[in-house]
Image (cartoon, rainbow, N blue to C red; front, side, top):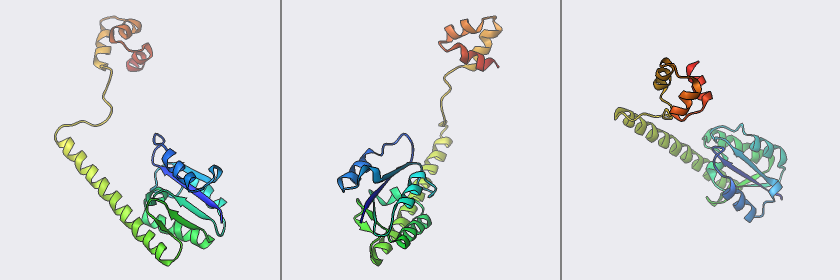
Length: 180
């Protein structure tokens, strides 16, 4: 039996360090830890794809949490089935569950459905909050940092790009981009 690890975060700005450290504490060698920095809403992930190729019958995959393997119930069921058919078990460290045995597979399936439902509730609450904020006049998106109208007004007054840039404390290239 060989131990493998899988860790995933949703964005490239997030850190995998805590998950990787937990996997190493459990005895997974660094070269057997596969990672992804993408959403878990689909199974087309490089690290997961490579893990699927590397594992063999009798191996065990450790994952810190259930939702790190995936968010979609159907995808989770298919992954668990695929690994099971290969003779590979999956253990979720924080959740204290494993796909070893019939009960383990059932519990994982139920919990993945709960995780997907929770994700949907989070999205619904986020959207409701966004709609309410828009109704109150709150604007979303990046704030404009350059007053484009002022750039055009200064240009009409006969100022060159260098003088406009100095006066507005912006780069000359920004002035040129606005004037195009």
